[in-house]
Image (cartoon, rainbow, N blue to C red; front, side):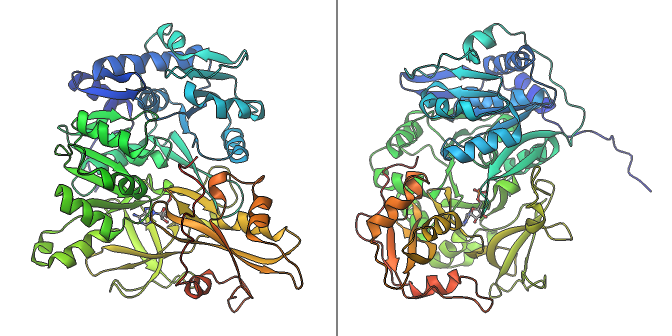
Length: 548
Ligand code: AMP
């Protein structure tokens, strides 16, 4: 017997229409160089509908990819809705990627138009000639005086949107693509994750729930996580689902600016990578944080000491969440269970430091990668973490590397190594993907190694991440020199300089006799890390003040 319920498509336009009708008096606040801009939901929704009309005016095809190269602003949130609500595909571009990767991504996704914040034009304009299909560039004036290039493709956002007619939104197929976000591959170019209307709908619902982020109508939500990272952790969608106010920091991502905004705008909910919360730690006595009820940290492990420092100062620990671009991204949250109350304070802090529980909709398992044997949930056995669910990717866009990331029975291989306790709480212990995550952004070890091994004096090079107090991890290069060859640290770093972004450059070069190998002769990063367990970064290491 079948159920007798309607076959209702899970798409974004009805969610938008509901917010427009119900929460017209709620607000989106954007910080700018000239103070904050306030927009009611009603005005924002009207602008979003005109933005939809503008995409028609520009002649963007029915499933056209629309890029954004922008900070966290109310306009960016409008794009998050206008694009998929007209059936097109939002493609958020990571402004911190280096040139070659951005060129690849824009061309691979076939972006037809890109919306760019004016303050980002100095980076963007240099890349424009490399974009093959981009027919229009819509410049969003954010008060910066960056030069707008003399190019017929340039269009002013205000003129475009003011001149456009508002449109009715509607999408009839829940499986239609709604958004794309590229993520780093261990080797080669970034890989495209494609969210559907249905996956964003279900992820948005899950994020609202107490087993997700628990966002409510009464919240004032400040996404510190960039809107171009991993579907903004759902924070461009979920507040609109629930009618929460949104407070958007614009380009002001420094800890002081975030702290001031939390205090002046009475923010109740905020989320970002641990680097941000580390940066804000010295400011906890200097601003009024009494409005905050929840701080979420993810993207990298939230150190227990950091979370505890927040709990001691503000009375709220950092809620730890884990996920990936491929998982939309919320796949587990370290929630407290009622039985935790019986635990000692130390044990409770240990619980909170775990990556936590999958919400309804996400299933996880840990397996031996080579055999696929499933391991017990005893918090001791460790294996590759695999997940599945309706907001977990099933493949990468037009990419033959998909096969290596998915099992034959349809689970995503996360590349994270975890133990799971008897209740199902995940604890990450390692990573099998050869990447270093610095301040929330990926650095490819393999890319650095290949460049280093192209130097005539280098026989072998292995790059590993080491702990860093601000950036969480920084790369160091372990180098074996050719017999009789000489090359110093500065020479090798200078050799890398023309090829990679500044923040990718290793903080140190350690000269070793041999890179440890596995039984099949591959570099054993695990053994190398063990060998360098006592290594400490030189004082003052880390060449970059700010990422990017
Ligand atoms: P991305 O796709 O850039 O969001 O990166 C996803 C990866 O970041 C995961 O596979 C993990 O390796 C890492 N990651 C994300 N959240 C956490 C967390 N809470 N703790 C440890 N690592 C994390």
